[in-house]
Image 1 (cartoon, one colour):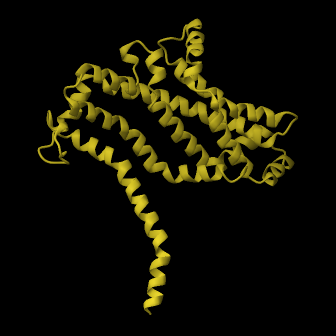
Image 2 (cartoon, rainbow, N blue to C red):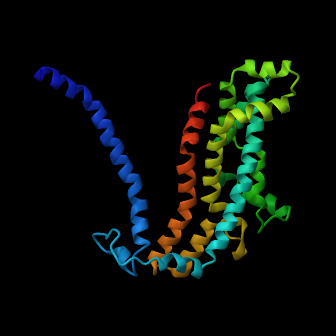
Image 3 (cartoon, one colour):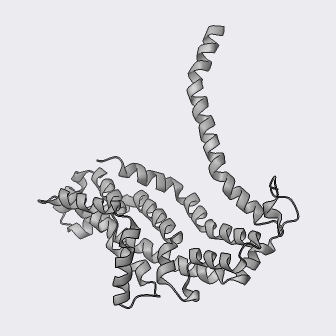
Length: 283
């Protein structure tokens, strides 16, 4: 009996180690958010107390209202939301259509073309930033949302890859049967493939929203009018306004900026995981 229990414990050691590592990783990732939420409810100067205080009364909920009062945060939220929604529409529409073409239409040089598209992921955005800035300057699009929205309607290598891999996982018999029934390729794409692609659409939606919502570099160089700032640039402006004082208000504004992304991922995490898995099924 003792030998059996000993063997059972030894067999469970790997699972225990994996569980401990996962718990440790969760604590490391969640701790900054918990600390920020605690600091955002504290009074002036309490953010630098060592050891830090966690959720001790009194709570200063006025930090959040003051963050909106000191800077036009609500306006920045609307600006970022407007840009993010249009980016999501553009990303889903363009990348799904391009991915469908790569998945279902094989022609001479199609693999080379797809490889070329993937190679664009190796180009850092900073390298092309100057060229893009000059291009948008020549067309008079500076200080507008055009440079922040239009590129999403022309697809991206990573998201095109995700859609292509997902469409490849759909049996070709479905496509052939729809052709036999008289459906055109665009109709097959819209009425057959897209309804079957909800997980990958959710994945692209979340990734696009996060990329757009957290984007600071492009709005910083393209936007000059304060009322057009996005939430990321608004936080930077808020930091410049308060300098090193009122850290609690800065943290409160940062927590508000994080909430939309956290809520979106919380409600769509199942579809997000399914989309990533479906994209990895077919090589």
